[in-house]
Image (tube, rainbow, N blue to C red; front, side):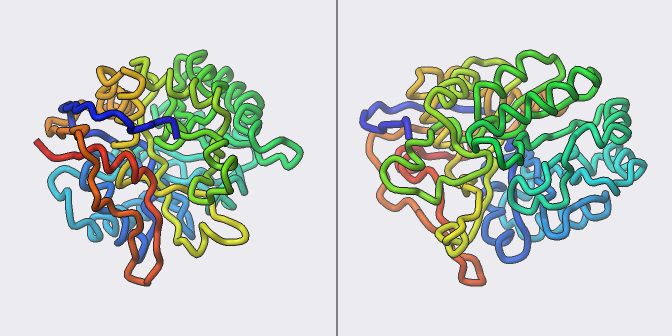
Length: 358
């Protein structure tokens, strides 16, 4: 990771309560174990629909939102899950429009079939959904894209760029009224595409900002850093960090926090996903601190994403403090009611940064 945490400078910043524009809260015992880590510090949380079975209707989204709020024991007055629908060939467009207009649905998510966890219900080509996407463009319903080719002939580190070139770029050119978020951008190609098209936006994760593939592979394989799209090269990481810290309103925080039990992360075939909800803000703050860009931190975590999705910044505030001394009691693993352990990302940064409501 890029953050050295080796200086002792004390820093304090106050920001509007931030939003997480891409999060996986899972369901059942895992939902119960992880939801408070998002609800404690985030206002809006754009919740992904790739459950089993996937969330494909407004009624399903409402039911899932109710389970989320029932599971949350913090944030009752500040936490607002924003639900999404999974783009499938059988999606009911009238139901989608009604759910969006009623404020139930915040966007529609496209997964390439087989690209990541619970993506088998996805499609093979974005343009196959032209009829649905045309209605979404007319109704100003955001499309959220997991931009990753599933072509087995492509190098894993080239799959985001290929998908953007082959599918997302042509879609944006063909439908200039369709608003698209390229989620969890992992490459400079993603930054370039978002900058090229007026209607394109990009979310960036704490782990793609702070890690590169050497962190994943150079000193022993670290399965806790395995995610999709994969953490890419140092040059790509620097491009992401430059975009995030630039103040460009098209880029914003989406943690892509995605918990898995250690039994599935540290397995012969590791599950893709990083659980960063507890410490994602601290990791991001440290990246901005190291870049001497803390003046742009508030835009990235509290302003840009809210504006993209049509919301005012939160009126609540958080205070983040970079402490002179490291905390010694930072939690590294949580356990679900079923006994599954989940490893937390960002422990080093969490030992340096503290967060409190103002």
